[in-house]
Length: 56
Image (cartoon, rainbow, N blue to C red):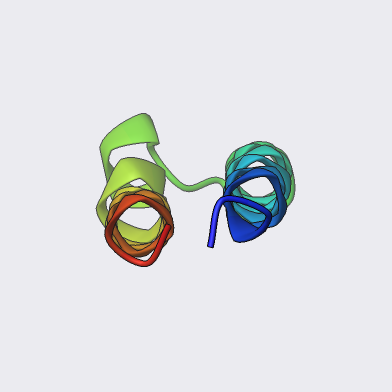
């Protein structure tokens, strides 16, 4: 199961980077506030990282 660890961590890193880009897009194009983007993006990032550590 150790072979799956880098793949899950890599997926979590990619999702985190994508969520950062989504947050910047929402702030710039839709005029959302920082707390609104955190409210939408942070739960996704936390769930992905928890799943990556639980299933690895």
